[in-house]
Amino acid sequence: MKRLIIIVMTSLIIFLTSCSTNQEIPYNINYRQEMRDFVQGISTYAKETNPSFVVIPQNGHELLTEDGEYTGITSLEYINAIDGIGREDLFYGYNNDDEATPELERSEMVGFMNVAVNQGLRVLVTDYCQTHSFMDDSYNLNTGRNYISFAADSRELDNIPMYPINPINVNDFNVTSLPEVNNFLYLLNPGSYSSKDTFLSAVQNTNYDLIIIDLFYDGDFELTKSDVESLKIKANGGSRLVVSYMSIGEAEDYRYYWNNIWAKNAPSWLDEENTNWSGNYKVRYWEKSWQSIIFGNNDSYLKMILDAGFDGVYLDIIDAYEYFED
Image 1 (cartoon, rainbow, N blue to C red):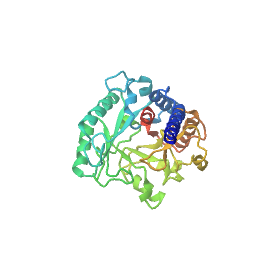
Image 2 (image 1 turned 90 degrees about the vertical axis):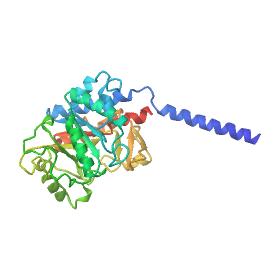
Image 3 (image 1 turned 135 degrees about the horizontal axis):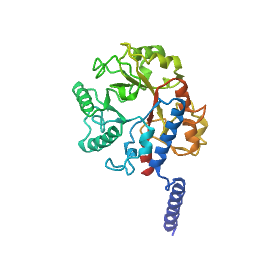
């Protein structure tokens, strides 16, 4: 009898826990459209301040079409709100760094990248490989499809690769818009540089047409408008674009907006920690309280990026909808 009671009580606890969890998860939300709306709002806000400001979401390529298939009807309102699309692991790094992406996954992603190109968007590909022949192959495959690319030899994006010696399609042109870009550098983690000045100097001495960096040096020190302006001239004298990274699908506990009280009293938009990236937390990105941290007011993250003089924003964790769909 006691065993039966225990079984019944255990089942009841599991049921009640399940019901509680289900009540907390809003299943009636179109997570993909909510992300489109979020990106579109960011774009509208930024371009009202600077009409030439570029908006480039990374990954989440299924948002380009209404049904999430590259053969589907394009989501024109979303496409019209962005200027390019970033894609990681297109040819190298999907399963493991320095390893070719499987054909099945590659073909599907290429299908979406071609949708972007056909809609007039610039495609920025970041492949993760360090073997020189693989890096060469990555650049050749991307160039042949009219994508611009960066072969990162570290998943941490913490260095300027020594190979190739010069950026692919290096030039001394004045690059003032995304369609003019022929190559780019993706450098998010400057911790290997001894100081901000050392980091800035290293970037200044490159000839990349576009630089993607963080608004903050080493997580704490916000780059000034003067710092950003100093990066807009290539070593050979040509001008270039400088774009700021910003994660909108996860919250990061090392950002200026983080409040330690959230560990005990989390806001409604804050979800569980990403098990693959310590300190990164899933967010219910459709909630206005989270979006107000990102854009729409003078205290927002995007306003800080605009005030620092960046030419655009590179939006990460666009594919956060997958977490909630699953």
